[in-house]
Length: 541
Image (tube, rainbow, N blue to C red; front, top):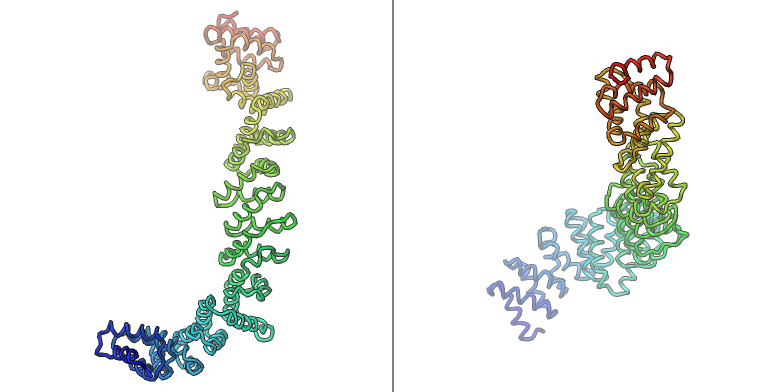
């Protein structure tokens, strides 16, 4: 029997009371937990209240107080759909076995959207009968119903008693174990894996490891990885390979949880080859984790993997890989090898600048290889030579200058004047280059010149322009060099004499000396006669 206070509270639900009073009374009624026939009648009557807020509050109260007489009204509201149908389904699910049975019967008669609401309500009800019905809903043919039941059960897991969690775990493991005989629908398998992951069920670990492998749906793999969590902190070899394969997967839903697990896994020397595969991950996050885990290991294999990152589209990754390579002995060797094989001038310059701080530590054989490659590029007109020569200059500028001079001298002695000139011109770019090298370069240029005696051709000949500058600045040295250069032919000396004899002062004097050398060297030749004629014509006889 209700006391006077309870009866007053019920009177406040009368339609003649203001709406805000009725709402407050409904809230208090649910909190007091009063269970009485009069309360049941008041709740049932209130479900038809003209105020939507009052109806919604009383739908909740019907479930809280397990008002069984309200079941027909609840079922009707569910069938009608709308905003109140979800509250009505939850209230019916809380009525015990009778409400659960009614909802299960109703599921076969309503539209798919309402079936999903009923499944969610059964899972969220928290009663034994509704819970069993919700677990049955996990096997429904409609993926939407399965998903609704799974989501609602997952939301209830944190507040479940341990016994209920154990019961749910038993049921889900039973579903998976039965797959050998009767395969689960994809939606049901996904729901089972997700719920086991939410339960943190240790007995499901074997199932999780199996379902992270390629071949299973992406959603199932991602849910299984979530379920592994901290239990995968020290995986054995085969399981580590599975995790690494997931981390390198092209679908980030699989890669992300695998990377989170791997972040807490230590890398042993024996497992290093397996970890290297992470450097080929499709997503840059996987490669960054590999860099974090392995980037400081000074091995040729790690250096090779780091080197491959230099071709990646992500600039930050490239920069980090370069930084790590520069710290490692094996990395420096790999960078030098990469420079030797650079595919473009830009790539060569990037690699060369990276090696500037430590190129001085390179041994003689490696520097020899760099010089040989630079020489081949330079002679071929390949701009990659500039990067290699720059790096060698940083390492030992005087040594590089000596090597270039030796190379030029050796080629000139072999009468390969055009190849020698390539190196001599490189040396003369230096403003500090001495007269001896400039004279050697001018003489080699003379050897390969067309030596056309027409005034127009001589005016455009850069070889004669070089000799002009040398005569103006180093008159005595120029005359001495040409006089002693036995490898210069009479025709070449005549060309110099013919041109400069027409000039003024020091240049005219130099021209006269060249013509006299020709006349003296082969006095009876036609060239000697032409030289004497030119001397007479220019007043230098």
